[in-house]
Amino acid sequence: MYALLNTIRTMYFLKANMRGVKILVHGTFDRHGRSQTFVECLGCIAYLEYSAFILYDSIQWPTLYGMTTLKIWVQYMDYQLLQKNAVI
Image (cartoon, rainbow, N blue to C red):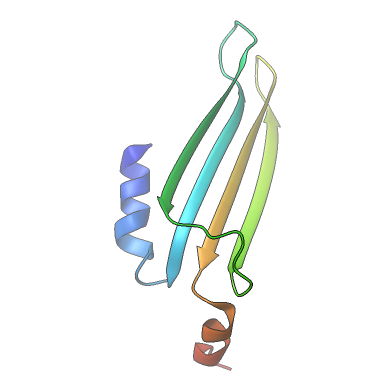
């Protein structure tokens, strides 16, 4: 997983004007039935900024031991800055 995150950091952060990525995986991963949460953050995600442009997606899938959830947050540069640089 760390190799994947390093690839994302080097290839896409500067090219896509991204400020941060947060990946959360939650669910039961073994036969003991206790849920676990794994969180990995690259960069920073400011939830309280008014001009923050954050994309969020969530997906659930069944596994042998229960449901697992994957949540991803991606914050880009300021929304007004993206609109000015957009090609129409």
